[in-house]
View 1 (cartoon, helix red, strand yellow):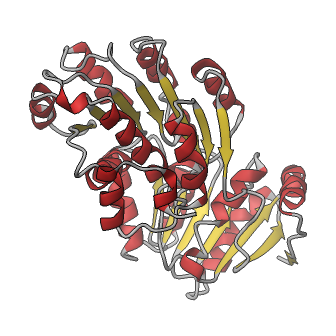
View 2 (view 1 turned 60 degrees about the horizontal axis):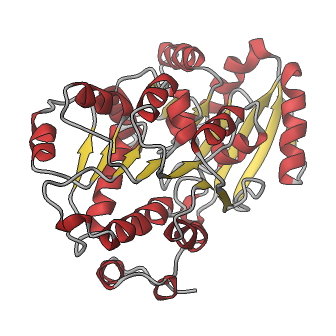
View 3 (view 1 turned 180 degrees about the horizontal axis):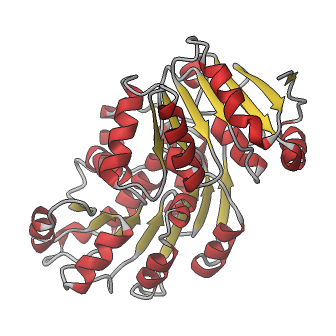
Length: 373
């Protein structure tokens, strides 16, 4: 299938052509027609699968067809909720690219900065808002934003929003929206909390899943160490003595565990930083920037905080704690082996985690080789 087979209108197709898109990714091919039919959708797709275009392109087309751009003053007809400033900015850039000929106006709303430029844009009238939950509610309370005319709602990285503590904010936002709307929810993983959200937000929805999480990248070399919990830090230090591990992403189960481990590594002379949902936007961005530029050798992260990490030359992923959900393991190790390159994924498994390991191996249909410690 080609993009021209998706029945895009001329202004959108022209923009897509300029972007150099010819063949849609699997999530785009499956999701765009469903969204254009006006159906609610649950999209299961990981970072790097083209999901932003999968919801942005049909959203722009539907608003264009409604001729919202001809009305004045403009009413907000679409809201895209995302957990972080970085993602909000990225989505805004995509809307600008795909909608350059559509005549629609959008605003990107997030906290951590002055609201003056944001409220100035809102006062001129916009059709689409891309927002983080906290700043959105703040501007709603100040009456800069009214959501009573909303037709489309998109929740991107829904699992990450819940992990970062936005559950209460999302409920408050939902109470402000018209019941008669189209809702699109995208999530890389589908834990029970997401299914609760699906049941409360989506009506007669269609589920689309791509890049099955049971299919890890074949180029990734996977191994596991059986180790007592008390010896995990010793094992990690032993591995880091090998300078060949020059760019290492370490996953812990909890935010507290990430901070504690990062501090321990720093005390041992390892340049390390932690990244998780309790960190400020600035701190997360700085930690990620240091890691990408290799000023930081080890980045210790929780699952959701690492969602946006795309480092082409990431050599190793280490599962310091095995995840409770086997699908999350595949998402973790997918941070390495990017763009067809090789990568190494090492896992530490203590006695209490053996059940997790069995579930992972069952999901990926592969026995992970054991290395003696």
